[in-house]
Image 1: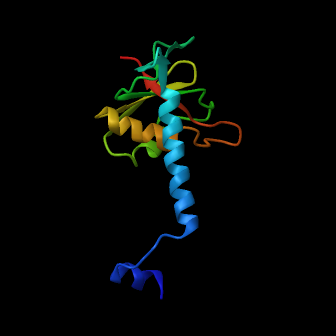
Image 2 (image 1 turned 180 degrees about the vertical axis):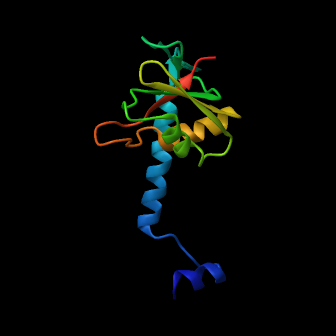
Length: 138
């Protein structure tokens, strides 16, 4: 009996490979949560880190924001290139190039900015440069 027929008649059972993949996804999600939580005396508390940038006026943060900061951009990267990348995400508003090979990307909501950050962080812009994204402290 094919999987399609089994799903239709309600007798379908997930294969071992599918169960392993699902378990890996769940474990990866738990590790991500564990990395973002700091344990203090048995209780969990959020520990957002803030990093000041050396050049430019934008400050990177781990706290979600509607603005993203793209750092260490290659010299051939321009606002049109970045706009083409970020337009595919809902809520995209605009890109502003700043001094020091950086840019800020604005979205309508924090969750839309988070989706873009997760989807494009580490994207290969050129043979030697990857997109380095973080939230901008507001």
